[in-house]
Length: 591
Image (cartoon, rainbow, N blue to C red; front, side, top):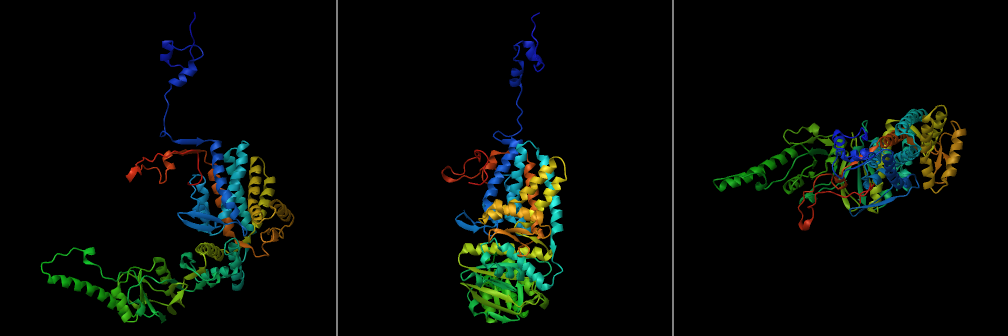
């Protein structure tokens, strides 16, 4: 009688002691259990639906920055970093310069870089499209739909879109040579439309096509050298069907060398041709002071032997990746041979591809078949610099573009624009399939996916439908950035694509006149590789971010340089900390 019943959660010791009162057993047992610690003290962990939405919000902050750069009327970004100013509207450059530190938002930086390396263009589109897919997914998550269902629907919609894209593409491989060249120029002009050099797009588009046409079958873009020379007009830029590089450092005697040759023999070396001080190389112990002179004479004999062997090859031009000293410079000048030392590795490799020679690491037994040749070699003044030109190469597989212009920032942006244009031409030469630009292909894919969604059942119908709506962000952003009414333009395009059939499928945004136009007839063409890569990359990035439901962040990772302990012992207490930074909520950009 009068006994107390304990809850099953009480331990035997607690029951035996009788120290618990009725109704308090569960509360007390909660405090008696030991805490299990898995992670370091201070480690931040976030999980669940809230974490996914937090990652989406961070990505939206990045997308909002680059979205305004899309299209011919897109705005430029001025980014200052370390005292250097960059003015650009290239998506990959902006993403790289932003120094994003949020782990999820970094995925957008990665897909932008991948798009730039793979096809050269569409770096802004891929980020904007991924951001819009995440924006639509956020609404689903807040309404209670689980992330795996969204991911499944997005991947299915992407497969359908890619298949339809290939069906819609127009094959231009049957055209003749002149029509193919015209097609490549149109693709390059479409790329340059949104760049700072858009006023000179015809000039640079033709230059891009001509430079890639010189590369041979492998189409190695690294064989196109781009050199920047400040001064002059943009139209003073030129394409060299061979190699041109800036005059290297030279010693006394260089001015006595000839600067122009017709059909010269060219020797390429990876060899040093200068005397070295004895103390830098070896320790020599001598018993007689007269022996010192014999050592010096031996060194002179070695370098003279090298120089004699070079001259016996009959070479008129000698280029070396390593230094050519004052002795060798004067020696070559006396024998009417041109020489240049410390030539950049990339320039030397392009010269090898142009003149057909081979780079030698020794001058012993040099055969005549390793020597290269070209139609003409000369050193000319370009702006305020001296440049070495190798032109008229019979088997050239390289080209050089000299960009002229006023401000350094403009020349830098012109280089980035030309790089994108060259990559697009390369892709178009390998795959002659093209589609209409200006948001036309996105609108047509959106219409197709909406029709497909009506034939499906369940939650996937909603997800595919909203994937189709996300595709419309490209024409909408193009219209808004051009100053047009985005909603009105979008409604007109929906009507055209819904009623036009084969004739209306290529209607897109006319950013110049703020209306809609048949982009295919206006020659606003894009290689299919650009759209394939953009669709696949943006969908995968969105699915990857949606699949992350937990983030574990060590406070050490907030420190620049990672999680190691600070080992510096600077003066005045600097560098003595242990690197335990204080994170106050997630940050997207580095301060």
